[in-house]
Image (tube, rainbow, N blue to C red; front, side):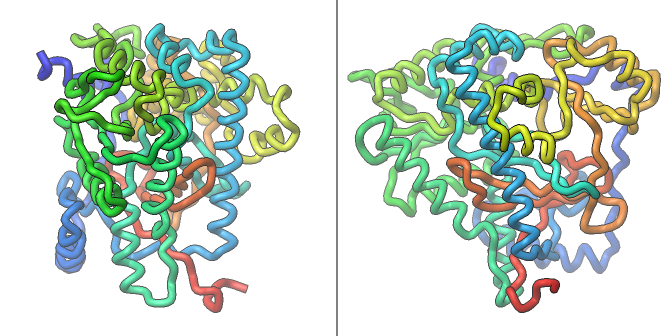
Length: 452
């Protein structure tokens, strides 16, 4: 039974029409032999950390050894954009907590509403804002506020780069201590005492985020905390209203299992048959939410992230912008591309100005369930508009991202802890960044090396 239910973690399918005729990502070119030789040396150093093991993707390197060097002004501009959009999400969460009718526009399922109601207005702990540089300045295409990833790549790659570039500062050196401090403070606030045992919940049958789990284990163990790991299927209700993993009670659960996987699994395309495991994880949710509501366990990130992770929240920010503080209205216009719920979007304009729009599903991630108008044939674009279930999608204005190298785009993933920018996960790729993007270290230039 568990093997069937665990299959919910696989990626959602692309409609047959788009799968058969849509644009296919080109296979990554094989690097020259001398580059592979140098990369193999670097890969050995990364595997020597004892955490990173998957250093290739489809036969191509997954990492770049050369760091992205940022001035203090460049870092501050990226951080300001990320913090501004995160603050806007918090204001939206606060408004939704006192105006439940706003939830109707997000089209949350019954169990997603349950998750939100159990935690509201709490949603934030750690997040990653995906920031891109454009000719008009930084743009934040989305905020990953549910289960942000990439920490192992960012932290370990940055440490090696810093060792190779004396005098430069590692932009991620404080990420671990800040995250542990957040976990400790949230646990003390929710339970009345400091954490002694931490449970990490993640999809145990998937390997892609195992390095993140191992990194968290190392961070927490350095604090003197016991660590237990498992999936939601391993949660148990224990005496005294507590929750545990494999029979051992935990004071806090670090949740790296997506909220949309805890709830109902519903298709986003009219042509999809649905999931064999569409039912919510009701038992596991009952165990964890009961302990949380009784103050017997903390959850990081809180289940309220089900609201802010939903990309329809980006559209709701634009719809409600006149009711937000003046500085937030300014920040939305400056940093967040215009976004509309698909059922409220101007369909004729989407057809007529295809190149100016991008379609995104509510909980798609890593480039999955993203249809870029200018990269799609007119027939496939029309098929996407016809097959997309409107209440599961948004339309967002396209922007031209700049990269460190010609023909590439650079995704500056800014980590935020308790709303404060705390590090960078940089990914580079020709075209849009997806699972084939390469991770690059982020270093801060010495002051005497900064331009000007």
